[in-house]
Amino acid sequence: MTKLKVGVAGAGVFGNYHAQKAAASARADLMGIFDVDLARAEKIAETFGAKGYDNYAEFLKVCDAVVIAVPATWHEKLTREAIEAHCHVLVEKPLALSGLAARDLADEAAARGRILQVGHQERFVAKAMGVLAIPETPLLVESVRSGPPAPGGRAGDVSVIWDLMIHDLDLAAMMLGREFTGVEANGRRVHSSHIDEAEAVFTYASGGKAKLRASRAAEIRERTMRVVYPSGEIDIDFLTRKLKNTTPYEVKVDIAADLPDPLGAADEGFYAACLGLARSPVPAHGTVAAVAMAEAAEAAVLAGVD
Image (tube, rainbow, N blue to C red):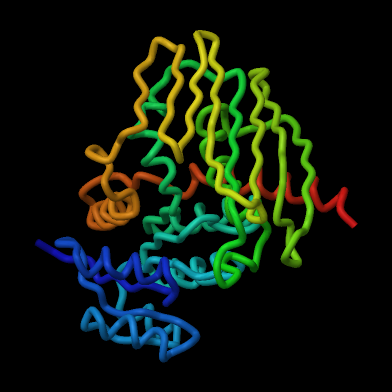
């Protein structure tokens, strides 16, 4: 079987995870790790018998496909350069920090016949639970995703909207539609120079609403979702695994047997798509809506913050 020559850009925690997946896959050969810190790149690369790089152009020359797991502010630049080097790309969320840039990257990849996939692993979870199979359009999607500050200031280069809320923006777009008609949002800085807590309410032409709250400055972790349909509602506490479901549709929270490794499933789906064996499970064009929503929410919050 032909194997995909895969490289991982980013020698942090997620880069290490992706490197592990590539090294263990029957469909991939891990060629190298890129990082601006060569010592960090070499440390991870040596673990898997690969090479470390601090020159991105040289790194791209040995790859058929790259996984980009660097700070969000660099996603657009590294993704664009990889596509221009004729590589397939799996980039962690968000695809870019503006809707225009996200769509342009998706268009460019398509024009060059390259796979561009985005790391929205929460889609795999929602699908395994059965939430994405419900045929009704929700009247309301409510979500809370909060917790204490990340160790070492992870993702401190962007606001909590791009860091955490982006997951639920993507799910809301899938359930309510990709075109919102309005947004109201507020937030505040707590421990960084970016917005650390935010709430946003989106309205849609269908009459539905999405009410989303995210924080990386909370004392305790909270991860809940409530979806109201014409036929009933679903309330999920992801931390306690409690579920209330009054709809006629089957939904489950215990998905360990069906989806033991969401990140691995995403990476394997990417490899298969690059090899022409399947369609990408999270194609870039389908993630532009979440970027546009995040951009709008960020602008609304900043308009009201000193």
